[in-house]
Image 1 (cartoon, helix red, strand yellow):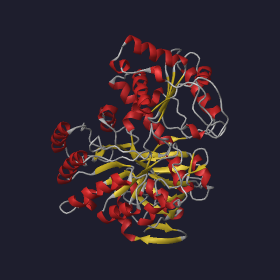
Image 2 (tube, rainbow, N blue to C red; image 1 turned 60 degrees about the vertical axis):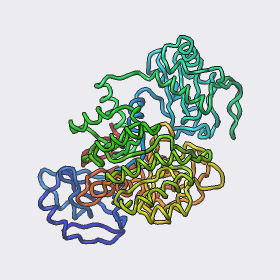
Image 3 (cartoon, rainbow, N blue to C red; image 1 turned 120 degrees about the vertical axis):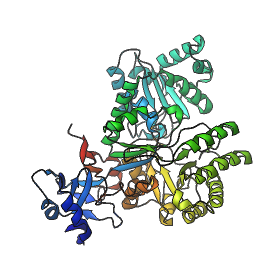
Image 4 (cartoon, rainbow, N blue to C red; image 1 turned 180 degrees about the vertical axis):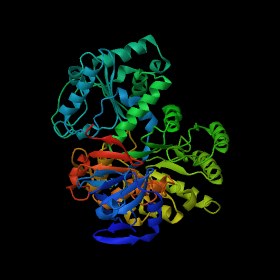
Length: 559
């Protein structure tokens, strides 16, 4: 008989004995603290795996008894094990195409260390090659000296290489060599995107004071629309890649994700992020170590393009994927002009909503899931108005539409979404300063409502890629380096459910992923410390010792 452990009690699940007998385990992991994240949040000691799926969960004695001659055994040495982490909102293809060329400072709270990372990257490449930091950080995160980077310190960090640092989409920093090269490109008009840039408004002078020591010097910071222009210009220097090289970039990026315990992602990016051919190639070769699902790529910036999008949607099939790769739904911008921000009130004309509704109705008729960006409550409320009308003929509980971000969503909208059968996706804000005295997003209200909600990163530009940073954020209420951002937090249990089992539901994968239960894929993460008992501020420092996908170790900290 097969057993599950709930707290200290042993529960017998006799219906699983046939499964275990028919599929003797090829792998057993034992002597661990296994957080199954099943509906009872049971804790077990060991699991048995056959052909990549879990065939038994229980105590050491019960599972080891299933051992046969071909069974490999792995002693977990008391370490905590969690299900593979699922990121419900990542710009995966964009990140994969750039990661190889970046120095990343996600979650680095020492300015000195961040500059050392940039300097080390410069030493690893040839003089004249670009050093990029393309998001995932914020000026506030350096506890020793908050603020933006000056030209002088970037010159010192990389004297022979252009350095370009992007902070989300709102600001950019660079050293002298980068400034000179971008200015020369503008003067030469060598690329159309570079011709559109104007570096004359580049801010200079003292730039760094925000709560720490101030430092004078030239700063290459540029904000708002100007920053976006420079970002677009600078990222043209990211090397173009052949098809074979793009496959190599996916392998590298997946190894990075595995090192953080990520085993599944949902890419809600755009066609400009690059096609999925290299992912498809790896999937067909059975060489993916991350399950990659994505939204439908189309352009819809005006009514004419909406017509084209509807034709494309009609010719495509929702949720056309297997266990490794493929299409799920539409988003995160169903109609691109509908793109609000938490930093300003965004109100849209009726014609914008009309175009959104055209696509939404058409999508519902075709059975499409929609994952829609909505930071302001006014946006979420209007989406719910449309969903409520559509729900009369096409049930939201079946379509599982998701409202994403939800920074300023109201309790009323949360309840409406729950009643309709929508879900919510919350995304990492550790690289953003606290807005005001409001909890943004109101994570405790979302949890208390009982709605199904999941955690994602919105990486790699807007936020850090590390899921343990997200788990720390919603359980501690803090953003980097140690600043309170959310007063009303959620429990560790609720946060882990959101990053695993709930996200599997958001992706229509609840029968195969998200928890350590019999019949599901054996996607697991072995942790270097106990997620449930370490001080809350250590959650952000948790590192996987091993990441396991379908029973195979795809990452080990020892390698």
